[in-house]
Length: 171
Image (cartoon, rainbow, N blue to C red; front, top):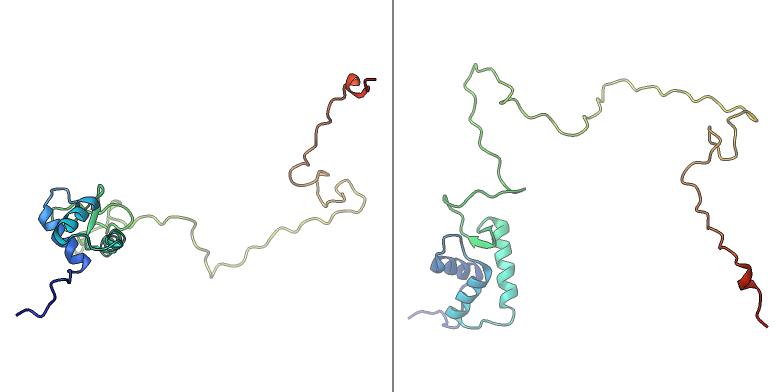
């Protein structure tokens, strides 16, 4: 006879695969239909069932065991559309035959961003700043060359309007 207990349930990935096989929907099955199938087959598992199912679905999706498309989970296969977005693998490129000349379309893409500095390039010299003459037209307390302070000007509070009638006390 079998040595396994009848109260043991299969692991969550096995239950998820079984639910997807049994539901056999064209676009995959959503989380609620997988949950309903597992609950009808195995009964109420425990109060953490929904958390564990979500955790395993996410792990299987991250590992590539399941594909999540249009709010449905499905097994990967040849008829399943390719994954879009950051995790999509690059398109395979056919190798060029020997002696072929590369055209603009087959050339490697232009690098993005600012080019790196050449470590062998000589250092660039900076322009020396003229020294300010004390008491000259460009000397200020703030060190500015135009005579105006740097930055945004201070916010000035508007003075409230004084009404002469309000200041007189009534007797």
